[in-house]
Length: 234
Image (cartoon, rainbow, N blue to C red; front, side, top):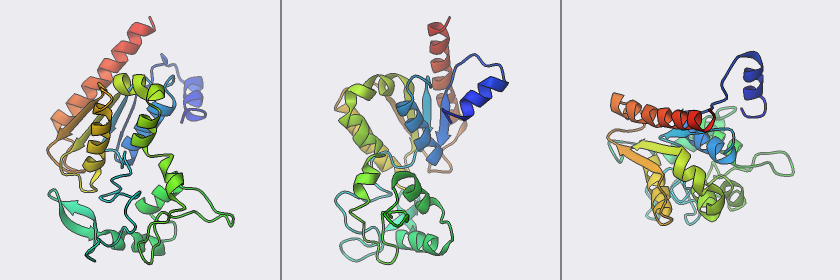
């Protein structure tokens, strides 16, 4: 995006240099990552229902303290996908095991591809053992590099200006993938640092949250960021 696509775009088309980024779900997480990592490139990021921004809530569970993503301590199945604020519809076990037999995988394997690395044999180090649901401790330090809440709060002086001024997060109060819970954890961590970041919670789930009001509020933020950029670059 930054090193290849944007330079190619600006080489072929006339632009004024302003760059704002928006994304929903995995795109929401990516919008945050781009704004945080390339602070001089982007002037504002609106992250809509981003993938887990705090790995103490990894689609419902804490990967740092829990040991299994399939089963609760009482042996019941854990839900990866819910409806209506918590009613389970798809178990995590089913999600992970289906992807284990799909050649390249889907959402779950994409997390391993982005957050993990490869072992000495060139195989991706998986967060979860597909057969048992056991969390792989070898994967945790690899994943922690991309735990946005951990990275921001651990390196607050590096990120505080961009977090306070250039980022907006919005999400449904009943997200199907438990993503609102991770946002709440990040929100609480940033409040302890007196952050002025805008984080808003709306009625709806991962798929129904994008109402006209939701869109209008997010677009207003991007407009404000663009106007600020114009003032700085007269």
